[in-house]
Image (cartoon, rainbow, N blue to C red; front, side, top):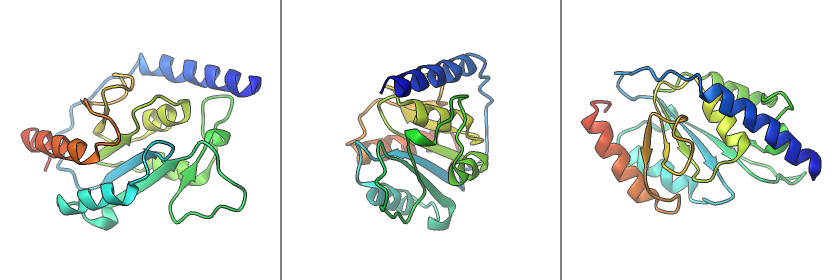
Length: 172
């Protein structure tokens, strides 16, 4: 328990220090590919959110999902990539193959769909090569290019606001 706290503390310090050096570059590309990072401990309607994206005109094969779970049981099988706190290293990196591939993917839009700060989620969001990052206003302001002030349970409100502003920004 104490070691997990220390691991969280050191990783959070690494992420916060690297966030202070972030330079947000304006991206004027049209959104075609979307990556979504979910925190499944608070939000279970992953498929409903993906269907909202499809209804808004994003192709299903252009949507990639990465799910964070607090605890993964030994024999649990998933049809989507999952990671947990155990996949973090002490040096602020993630060692799991699926997470590394997700981070390297140059998404046009990354949706950080979590409204509570957890070190693993912050790290993966920060390391992502996405050109435009969207998330909740309750998470560190330096992490996302655009923030929506709602909670994770209101996914329909989140999607309405997101696509309203994406139209204004000429991204769709």
